[in-house]
Length: 186
Image (cartoon, rainbow, N blue to C red; front, top):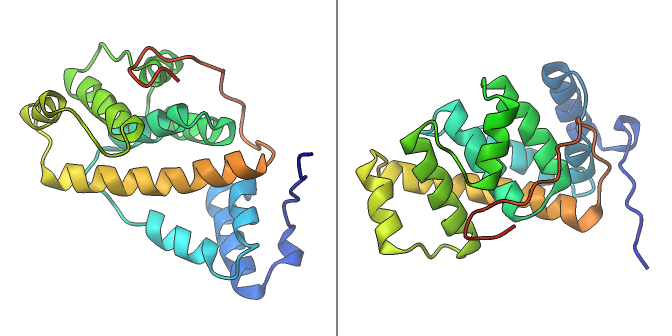
């Protein structure tokens, strides 16, 4: 029997979290259900927002691609919907977003390597073939990119797992179901 998880309303959360939810609502125009559900823990929302507020060395398009690949591998409808909207805000088209999710980037060699590397990193639980690691560095990525990529994997995995564990209702436009062609076969 599947448990039904209820997303708390702003009025039901502690004052310190309510302030964070109001700030999210102001910046995003609404309060995403995944953030509201994080308030079930007294400290999770603030810790998560502090973690995700840090900038990375990646461009907005690269960061969007990383989040899409991770969410695709983890088969997370909520996060795929949210990160698809975010990817569109970076200027990626629906066709490009689909290509990223399928592991089939053809318009940008460097982005293609990043997508392949991210897929291998996540599906291999951190283990990446030396040849692909070489390609990652040969296309211009650095140790800073490797560290920030792992940080983005951690951040994205938190929302992926929380969403998959709870089946929080998707409050973004739904992303299409896609089976990718990458080695992870998700």
